[in-house]
Each structure stands twice: as C-alpha cells, then as structure tokens.
Image 1 (cartoon, rainbow, N blue to C red):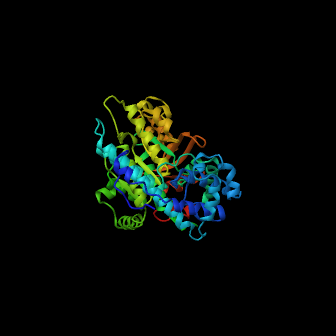
Image 2 (cartoon, rainbow, N blue to C red):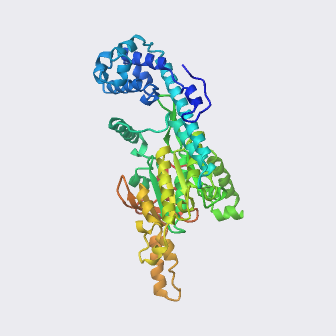
Image 3 (cartoon, rainbow, N blue to C red):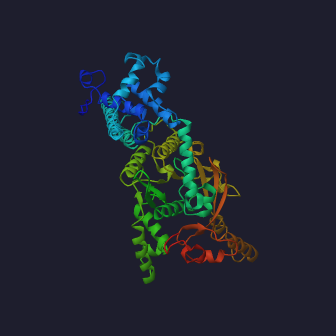
Length: 516
C-alpha cells in the first residue's frame, strides 16, 4: 500500500511515473470479498463508500453491481454476480469469474469492514487532491491574457470545498431511485414540520402558504422600485429565519437544522452597521431615526438593550464589502458554510455585484446573465436557497397601474430565465402619497383621504414566476415606522394590527416580545 503523500508531478513526467497514486488493492479485494460473503457488510459502509472511490476499474464495476443488487433486495454472491461480469475484459485479465471466488476467500470480518472502507475512501480523496494540485500547478504556470491569480485561487477553493463536502469533485449521474428517495425524504420532513412546509419558513404565514417556504437550491429574486421596501422585507425574512434557528442530532450523530437557519447576508449597498440598526429597530420597536439621533426615552432604550442581547444569539452573518464579484461571493459563502454553517443566502442587491470575468465587449445584459447564473450555481452547489434583490426599470412609473411585472426587471431576460421564483414588492400607499392634492380643492382632497385610508399600511408581494407552484398576490401589512412587514390581521382586526408590534396582539401568542 502506498499512502505517503507525494509532491504533485506534471502529467507524463518522470516524477509522476515513479510516484503512483495512493491506493491499496489488498484493501479493495478484502472489502469486496466481505461483501460477497456477507451482504450485511453493505449497511455498515454504504454511507461512506461510492464506486468511484475504488482505484482498480474492475473493483469499481464489481462494487457497483454488488451495491445495486443489495439495494434492490437481491443477493450478491460470487454465483449471482458472475453473470454480470463473466464477459468483462478487465476481469478476464485477472483470471475471469474465478477471481470472484478468490475475493470471497480473502474476505475480512464484518467488524473490520468500515475501517477498510474508510481507508479506501481516504486514499481516493488523496488521489483527488493530487489531481487538483497538479491541475492548479499547470494552470498557474500558463500565463494568459485575462487570467488572474485571484481567479485561480477562487476556483481552487471551490473545488476543494466540493471535495470536502461530497467526498469527490463531481456528483455525476444519480439513479432515478436515489433521486426518488431524496424527494420522499423532503416530503416526509415537510409532513413532520410545523405548518407542513417543505422549505424554510419566512416567518410570514401568507407568504409561506404561497411558496411553501424557501426551498433548497432555488434562486429567488425579490424586486421592486426604490422605497418599496425590498431591503426591509429581505431583512425581516433573514431575521425571522435566524432567530428561529433550532438544531437536533440525527440518527447518524450529525447535527442538522430542524427550524430556521444560519443566514448569510451580502449587503453591497448598506453598511453592516446600518443593516444591524434597521434590524434592531424592528426587533426593539424603536424608530430607527430615534436610534440614530439618540432621542430615545428610557423605556425605548431598555427595549433596545434587551433586543440587542437577544439578537446576539441569532446566527446572522453580514458581509458589507462593496462591488464583490460573483466568484468572491461564492468563495465567501463556501467559507461561511464550512466554518459556521449556512442555510440561506441573501444578496442586496444583484445589480451591484460584478461578473468574475468581464470584457470591454460584454454588454450589461451579458454581465447580469453571468451574475444570475453564478447565483443559481451557488444555490445548487451549497444546496441552499439564495434570495437576490433586484432593481426595476423606470418604465413602471410611466404606467397608470404601477404594479410591476416580469418585463420591468432590469436586464430581465437572464433574471427571469435563471430564477426559480420572482417576487415584486408593491405598496400603493407610496404612490398615492405623492398624488396629494391641494387642501383648497376640498372634493379632491376628501377623495384622496378616502383612498389613503384604504391603502394605508398595506403591501402586496406579487409572485410573477414560481417554477414549482402558483403565481399570484400575497397581501401583507407594512409598518413604515419600523420598516417592518407582517401578516395582515383577519377581517375586522386591521386597527389592532396597525396599532403596534405583533407581540402585543393576543392572536399572535406564539411571538415573543421582540419578534416580528
């Protein structure tokens, strides 16, 4: 067995020829023999070993056949496996079907099987690391126009992260049976979870009812014109998710999230202090301008301190570095998941991110396309929902009905195509306020007041696209004093909902003192 780490060599060099990749044919033979003699060994190793972890191609094919037969409830023995491999040219070189009997004779005990499996997997990871190092060294030696060392580092970090998380660089094809099992697991988790949500709850019941929560690997676009409150809604949802974070130990001894989640927030426009002040204002029910000016009374200051102490425990991480490239966003998200965990990622906002490799000839549409594709790739790679905020074009303002639609998205083609969900924030109150007539025109002013009473404190979340569900409009309440969105009260309770925090409403007994 060769397990000593070697200096990576360039392909075809003498050093590479003299330093074979780490592997152990004996360990592979012993483990395969154990599987053929006792199929119960499979249950001990299936969670850590994949066919691609075997160094010898024949052993790889044998394990794949054994794995498939055992998973389908069939017996895997030298006799039952023989028909599938007797014409295999690689097996013929090892002695043909008789090799299966020799493997069975070299089997190990069921108790040692997991140790052997871990050794085979560890050697496979070492081979992958050597391949990555060789490839990186080769790329670093080639100096070409447009290539930057930082880009190589970001790509190397991505591949290393994938290797650490998956055990191999690429997942490749999976059988429909495996995909089906994963889908059933998601449905079972949703059935057991409060509210029967398949995804992570936003903390807004009306929105959850429409979306089913935030789903893993989805890219969600939250768009709106300035002052509609898209950043406020994003911070509301991020805070709701972080403050409800709960974990438990699963059957394998691993800690997993069962409610809420760890939240990453890229604030490319506002500073982390400004974002924290906004969340603190919402949690403490103290207007942000009073916090900023220091004009709080004693009771408000006391609430502020208590809310800050509660917020300290929330797993919400903010990165306010401006003008990040999509590659840097991906690298920092991977690092956060590796160090603290990551369940949801927010980007405020999409148009402020930069493509990793832009050329003067690239138009803005091409750049935004690379950004949205990169965000979707992050969602799939890290298996988390990614919520990206987006600006809308000014053509909304020129229409009589100012409710946004998909065509209003800036550079809408790529955003609409790559997103799984597109939502728009719309508050009619904002536009009606700017239509205020002169008080001298009594009739017009009275009519305006009546309209303002109807739209006051109301907000709409218009779902213009949802790949896995219906589109439509979700009605929410909006409190401009604390820039807070919350569920609208049932018919007849609007006044109660508008008077103060959700925690003060007896119908929200499950909300704590500082929750939204």
